[in-house]
Figure 1 (cartoon, rainbow, N blue to C red):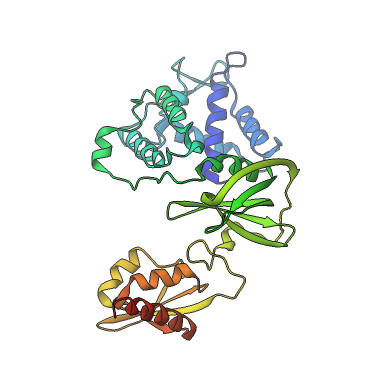
Figure 2 (cartoon, rainbow, N blue to C red):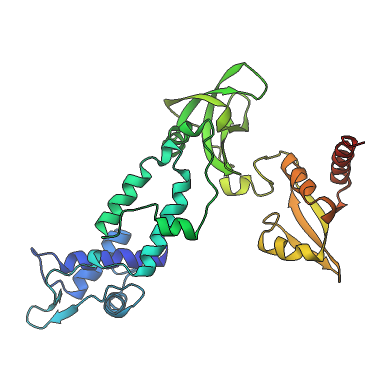
Length: 340
């Protein structure tokens, strides 16, 4: 847990103790002990000191970013702390205009997923939050819609499986999938151990472990015809790391082969675009001249990588590896053959 989150929890504890009518005027030691016990399961003072609570008081009183401006005062009669305003609480702090704009911007961004049943509850939840914070409940703010435009979320088949698959992953349930491959009328039934949901270019995919084949597999949700959650827990592979799984992937494809260091030469006018929107997280510029630069990425040689390179047309030259150069050359020759 981050230090910032620890502080926010302490602020809530302090606020609760200040407003406790059954035990008013808590001492600073009582507050420190309660915070220590709530965060670390003891009250010995190993993690939270008196000076930490004093700094919390100061932040709650004066920190403009927090915006609490809590009227905390020490009572010399009762030897404890209290709010000079009886009804004060940090939970009733009005939001600044910038805060409201940020919430509305975020809600409009998430509303791009409104076609998915998984996000059907989102509007209701946001409206309850807006009502609690006394913000206009018009989530799709008309003025914001005119100022900022988002790509619409496509209404593709399979979106109805997002919620049950998310629940299966969260609760460690095995799943029976009914899956139909492209260009096939046959529907296969697969028992899978769901690990990860991933979105790529407005399509969702499930990464799951196939116990009968002892390997991981990727299923596009728009090819799934049914999902049944089982009571049995799924097997967690000890070496599966969702952050590492796609480290060398370009798109959704994972490979058991070793990644390759790909070197691409671009004209200088492409530099700004590729710096602000890198091809891959591993991207580095290793050489630059007056009219061109050499870029290196470490990736699997997948279909998605070839498609992206083809999209740059005459603005890219593959320097290495040779196998990638041959694959792209073959694709260009086949494309050229369409017009000869």
